[in-house]
Length: 375
Image 1 (tube, helix red, strand yellow):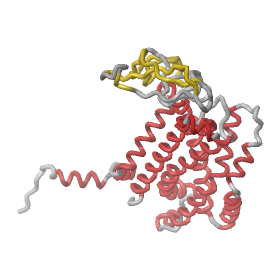
Image 2 (cartoon, rainbow, N blue to C red):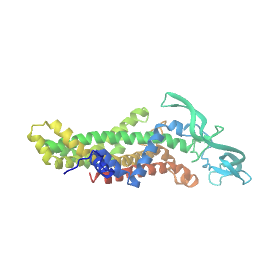
Image 3 (cartoon, rainbow, N blue to C red):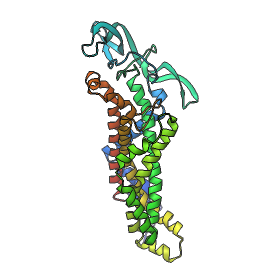
Image 4 (cartoon, helix red, strand yellow):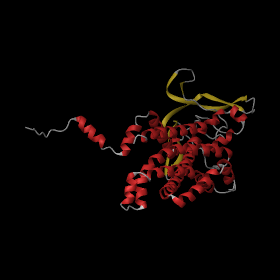
């Protein structure tokens, strides 16, 4: 005689049942968490975005404030002037000495050990408006007395390099994210339409894509950006740069999406949807678009570093961002002469921000690609 029991299933069965009902996003997230490179890249990307959003709070100084030109970086120390251990970190203000630099004949700047400046978190400093609306004077880190501290030194005008690099992340990342967003929307739309409908429309679209891809991009970037007069407003110049980068970048994305769409359009469930009379719009949005998105997401995370590098290169040449805006590429213009690099190597600090950004998005893209592939 069979016995029926109302007792709950063992824990193993619950786990299997729960994992069997996991969504696509949950499966990808579970696999992504196993990748230390992917999680490391995700963490760095989040930190970079937070730094760009809250740049006024994170930056220790006003990026436009001036001090001693080409002052060397100040290093936090746990030693007092007598060499004893100090519990609170400190820096020593930089003052001009009577000695002259043998190359530039400028007074050599040295630390003032008699007047240490204590360091701390959430300290008062230069006033600012967060998001242009909320007034504040608290900074994430800095000196407790509100005095200037230059962890990465200063540029030729005496402006803090670290603060300018933090503010520059806002423009550089904004350009990269905006360009990639436009490229993704245009490239994905054109690629799906071309691959799904095929025929004469596909042939004409692909010929136009081939024309765009045939242009030598770097000379074209320089030629187009040089069309704007120097006296043009910074917002107009920035918008033009974004448009130029987007206009030359969508073609490769559309070619990749078209190839994925051609393969998906021949799958049985898509043919079945056509057979039952589903509209083209429904088939594209409900059946093809979700399957293309996995490839698009990975492509986006790998395309952002390319745009960051391109903006830095064009900014170095003076074709991307104009003052008073700040970007990493614009900051690198100070490194155009070998004598400056040899005497003041800390002005190369923006390169470290570019490298970290490129590594973060590439690591995240590799992790997402490995997480999405099995599903």
